[in-house]
Length: 264
Image (cartoon, rainbow, N blue to C red; front, side, top):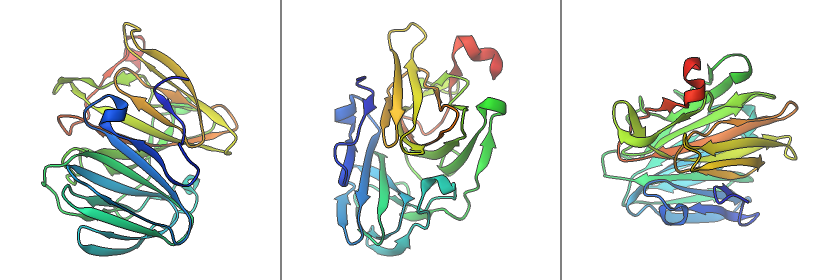
């Protein structure tokens, strides 16, 4: 199996714990908790800022010295409703107590103390279409460049309908050469419906020094350290993914793969 494809390390509790050290890069961290009602988890943010995304279910959240109440109302990610999320700056801590079965993503990157803790969505997040035809997908932007809510993190959700391609036309953001292109590491947390389905993701460079094509199943994570990274889902299945990006500059600039440059 490719080193870029990660499967859950457990079925309950913290099932993913991607750090810059484990991924071999410098910025992005990604954790994922699957909890049952009454489960309690807590973390310190340390040098990182984090965005907690209620992927599914409900939890009572206390963070940065404040009670944020119960977050979450989407019980199935494929409802495609906007998620409840919470930004927590570096140097703070957070705690979650599950009220239902729930899935909580912990998106992390270096924080510089430039933003206060705050709720992100569901208000202000609108499901929007990107692409056309077999390239159609639908986006819930949680914290992208236009949202001045974080120091480093860029976070978004994407829903790809049956038989469609996503993160396509192929593109890369792996060089620090703003405004032409920015260096952004990226994780994909994939969900597939029905749960016994599958999708595909390719991660490749122009010179093929990196060229991996992976079968992704419900609940997998794909690391994108560099290169182009399209994904697709066969007819009969739907694909969801949660993207986390970060780098030295909180800007999303990319260049297309040569073979698809005329499609942009």
